[in-house]
Image (tube, rainbow, N blue to C red; front, side, top):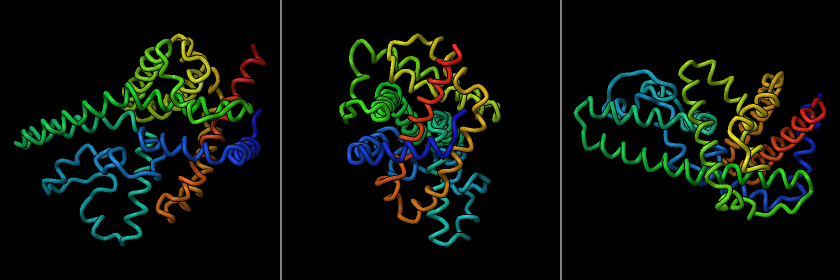
Length: 284
């Protein structure tokens, strides 16, 4: 049975051995995929990402929503507002595949309130962002897992690991499986609790694809499910254990995340994958 402290300690050691390349890899992933929410502020962390009523708020309607109620924002100090936005950005990085549902909802809402030009613009933007996510961002995420798995195993971990998944014989399979993973997650999130459970159940799919980009869809989902069986709560606790680091990162406006927390988190999760995979191999 794996231990959280040991997993995290091994993750730290990997970061120390591969510090500068790990920073570059995590920064590129944060920049182009929206992972690591507090690190970069761009299209991935816009406040409409989690708010299905964002367009209505922009029209000054009085509708409650998470971190976006006008009265609540007015009552916050500048520091509290920054912390709230950083927290929302972290949630956004967790729920990134689902945010396009909200963007589409924004577009529908804008048509409903007689803002057709805004609706068309939002629709086009959502489609472009979604296509980029499917074809580029998701494979990059898998490439990032490849880098940290190599680093964990003491292999030749290089920034170019990010591009290996884009090879002709690998790319399409990775695109399809990652798209289905995100789609299933999005549909399960309609049940609220089911979405959280499935997010953890599908968690190891990118790592499995990183090691075997030609893996079949059913096999990837099945193995990830087996690896996470009985481990969901413990992995959730592992995630929670990083919240102190996230808070410190907020105080540095994301700089600490770029320089340490993101690589530390990514390396720890790679350690977790290798540990769970080894446990599954031992059982079989």
